[in-house]
Image (cartoon, rainbow, N blue to C red):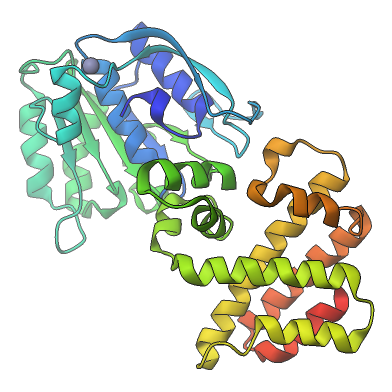
Length: 367
Ligand SMILES: [Zn+2]
């Protein structure tokens, strides 16, 4: 997948693309950040951009509706993405995605692009690493540069990490190593220090929605409901039960609309019944209420953006924008902020094993 097709992380990807064009990619990279945000895709995009037979120059691409924002910080060897790092970007050099080299890389059969990942036992053994170290000394077979991608690099056994050290220190000029990890601190400090680290941030709700719709055939409604509960991770979204989350988000929306109108406490408590008591087990009930509360938090966040006249591109539940806009009349900044704090407290109470019914009752009176 070329850089331009990856959702989010525009600044980091543009930086990588520029480094490929200038031939200044560090020989050892560590792509760090939450699981399921596209780090492995970025590693594959590097391999494609390096070895594509018909590379494209100066491709302008952007995920629509979002603006790009730079974040301060980051040293020479550490660059960070950010949640708003998703506007248009210019890729100095990008893969075509269609030539024989790109296709072979995508199918995992390019002789110079080697992906190492944990085996059945969940770890990466020294034999797997020895094999690529031996190959790294030879010239690439057909590509410009051999790219060794170590996915879930934190699963490298200590002996395997030690075997890698010397190669990472003085990598053969025709090879580069891309380590991918969501828990980089689990790597030996000696391995980490030999890699230039790129820090990937969580995706925005809209970006997760975009990936679910484009690559995983989710409907708009399912994608939104799952995305608001995914903490910016497509991987997490894909593991979720979309039916339950659709129900949770619908429940949250009804609750919000109801409390916006009803001041009468007893009628509000009826609304609380609506979001609890449908699951047969107490664990199911607790999880479902927690999902509903997280969806409610996401809706209130959107309402507060609308009531403050903020950037509509930041709205996570953009399919509900008309309904949220009318709710924004009842929820000014102050009410939104206190509702948000109450949701936080309710979620904490659920974690402490408080009764879902009591939590729901308490919450509806706070909104
Ligand atoms: Zn190509």
